[in-house]
Amino acid sequence: MSGYLARRFGFLLITLVLTSATIFAVTQLLPGDVARIVLGREASATALEALRRDLGLDRPPVVQYLSWLGGFVTGDWGTSFASGQPIRPLVMERVGNSLMLAFLTLAIAVPSAIVLGVVAALHAGKPIDTVISVGALAVVGLPEFVTGLVLIQLLAFELAWLPASSSIRPEAGFLEALPMLVLPALTATLVLLAYIARLTRASVLAELRKPYVRTARLKGIAGRRVTYVHVLGNALLPTVTVVAISFGWLISGLIVVENVFNYPGLGALLTFAIDRRDVPLMQAITMIAVVAFALANLVADLLYAYLDPRIRFG
Amino acid sequence: MGRARASRALAAFRPLYATRLATFGSTVVLLFALMAVFGPALAPYGANQQVYTDARQPPSLERPFGTDHLGRDVFSRVLLGTRDIFVLAGLGTLVAVLVGTAVGLLTTYLGGATEEITFRVFDSVLAMPALLFALLLLGTFGPSRNNVLAVIAVAYVPIVARVVRSVVLNVKTKDYVAAARMQGESLSRILLREILPSVLPALAVEGALRFSYAIFLVASLGFLGAGVQPPNPDWGLMISEARNFVSITPWALYFPAAAISLLVIGVNLMAEGLATALGRTP
Image: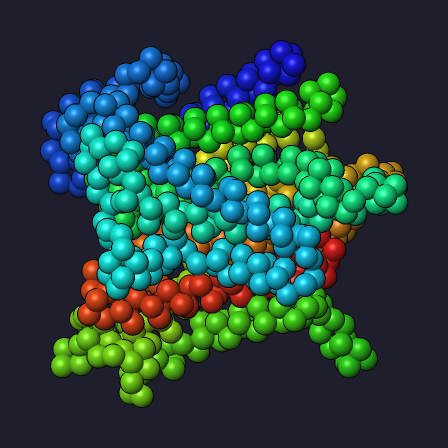
């Protein structure tokens, strides 16, 4: 297991380093003059020169990248152009909010998606399966900003059950924020729900077709026991990976959802940074999201290996 | 002769109508495609033609989708926006499929360090969710139609290449490929004549899926203000403009929203039908 762990961790580090290089290349090397991007067309030559010196743009690209990566790793993320503040506290303040929303979304989405997927698979071809499968396809077709705005209109304006805006106070705790978290979490849930439910259904169906299921049935084990103990135990294993993969959807979803609901998370900060062409802030937020995504994948792999000895020892 | 060829050509489209749901999906996509082609000829008003006296009109016979807060005809804007989304998402996907296929075929067939490096770089792009990567690019290069197009192509090349690679890895060890090589067939002939046909089914399904994601992506970027800029009749942009007036002119929000959803669902159903007919799971 420890060898497997070391290998997976090494792979994670390589991916992160390569991704950081891509992020850096895309934002700082490809566009030509970052100083002009930040300051705009009308900037004076002296201001441009000063900023170039501040950012170290006069150094060779490799040196620029290494010092940027070194800064990121040691916690020196630079200064935001748009707000003039150091980036790290700015980002850290938002990370907690986004995580809060992400976990609430996963807590709603994963169990309900698994139930829906299992129900659909056990009744494959029957009306309830058609309803769930077509429903999932329809929901996948709805962009988060559409479902979000419809939910606001319905639950906040028409029925007045929940607040329409989710601009929580910076120091708000989970309980205080909860009423404002429900609508954005529900919105982000819908996309994940459909995605995980579809894959769970496929995985259960594939498992049901395996010979051991027939053997168990022929041996006279009760149908329910076969389904719930034997089949689901094996079929839900890949769901762990699915949840990790859908973490990418969750990140994309949260970027949109936070903007729909004015929720002070990383996604909203990212669109702010993009509006102001705040390159260092964009880089830092992207790096954080990438690290989170990679960690989610690592955790899923380890969990999978822990649950399935064939991977661990294979 | 002519008839035989025509029926062969028709047979190529059969997977699009393999199941009832696929038929529905393909028909929806076809209708939107027709709107994209004929939209400008059919639209009763210009995309940015403002009739102030008609502002905030609910849907009626003269104004099927109503008018928005500026007095623009929502029906015309949705219709004209169809071409935009088809051009951006469709062309972006097409470029991604072509480049991704070429890169995937060539590097995987040749193997070695080129393959290793190419796919490591692709992995590093795929470590970012597509929306995040697109926002990063547009934030750096600035929002414009051409940049949105380029971003979709760049974001989806790695995924297409990866799909192509998984098939090529399987096929390139087959005897008929070895035979072609020993016969001295040229590289391009081996790639295009011997290997590409095996890749096509997977590519068709992936292309359809990419198209649906691209529609989503264009709309999301428009909504977030990082994609197509006002006053273009981009569906996502229309929704973000209409959201502030949702209690006054809800139709200005609901019709473009319905258009996006219907098109994406149509493309998804079409992709699913393709996958079933071609024996692949998406």
